Image (cartoon, rainbow, N blue to C red; front, side, top):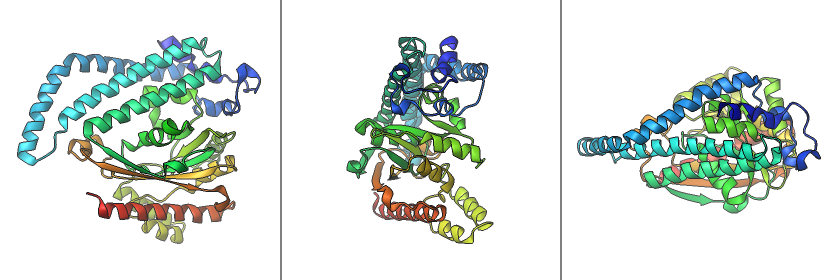
Length: 375
């Protein structure tokens, strides 16, 4: 297993990707550094990280499976007590079952990723490897989100589905919880076949499936908070070469919303730009958007329209403890997709900042309106 995982880096070898190599299509020929997620590490460092994350995951699945009957009994008793004493909807059993589903999805995903690596002759057919990896990614996301919907009895109300396709598109999405990171696959990729590239925080490499699949596909694992020219250039590279079936996604807020983070962001902006701080203070449900990454994507793909994906319902679900209190049970999640034609987006830096804050304010207003009528 370790040997197969170690060889994942070979899918993005250091030589340039030529269009004629292995029948490579345009989408597969981006900068090799971006294809490897922009993670500058040796083969040994990659293997050591995966040896720290994958064996505990497999052991966790074995233990959870062996103890599942006992865990179910304890969860049922816990739910009964909490329901009688505090009126909390049954949550413990839901979390136990989802824990098992998550562990199983991770292990099965890794086995599938290993199998397609073997089927691609150890990465010697990179296009075949990437195509199979993308399909596994969609199955993995669909399985996890489907489990959340069924276990917690969620309803998903989507408007603007007809605005998603075709590509190329740059997707801007809010970030409010530990669950909404599955929405892009459910709303954009799976139903419309849009192959999204992601700007992700580097900490997500601790998730083995995201690590292995994410470094095979065109993504960029960013070092948050650096704001360096090199980071922005990597993000710009990620957006290059998008076709009619492609898109690239970024979370403009950079992290999940909390009131504390909102106040810190407003204070930080006030030190250098009072006008932007005032605009950020008008956002009651969103953090101020960071224009650097969005601008880099716009520069990298000058023909792309922009999709703004807003959602309402996941607020207050930032941690597992929030879900433990019953906040996820029987929610109605409203999702809205709007498409902004590229001709409506300014080309200069100041104009883009003004446009982005305007888009974010309109999204904040929509969230507020839907919060007022939510059950």
